[in-house]
Length: 285
Image (cartoon, rainbow, N blue to C red):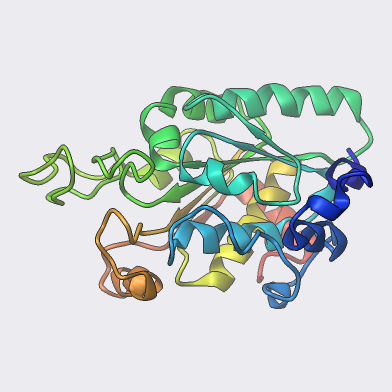
């Protein structure tokens, strides 16, 4: 993989938005960025198609800053709001069919390991709750059962945001949403616990309201997936549009739900992963 794939064709460069040229030319592939680099360089086009106040857009920027080696990272996305944003970044990415992102990532990781045996190639899945925990749950779980060395990141907005706000398996019990006018009848799927029992060596549930925690968890998850086994990060990204939140208050709602205990924050590290991170000096990050 090379930076050249994102560089504009010189014959068309003058017609491209300045923002895209900024992403490519201003350190999009800078390795080992710090949390403090957020906002210093462009990670995502500012005129992206996501809604005003979208917490997913903010979490995506945090993820992109956290990538240990952007040039040698491939993001595998799926249908949903996140797929609209992935077209606006300067990192290699693949759009897969709805729900099969972990299967695509598995094949990709194995192929890269054969093609580049002496080089680190990080494969990171990014998808919503529908693609990860509902329609794509079988492929998500089997990649964990097989101990595939990929990182899975879920944007947990607790709803099917891209198709009108229907309930998903991640919607909390009792919440009134489209297709659940009397409130959802069963509890939210406990994906962090499922990830732990399915073989993930690093599991974290974080909130976009705690940006440093998102950065740290994503960084650790990708590093552990390189050598130890599958990893999972769940990021709470409440949707302002479908949950009827003012765009200016979306991040505040995310923070309040954590404070009130409605969104539990957690981190699990297997003994092997803990030793590995300790040797890398990343455990306390």
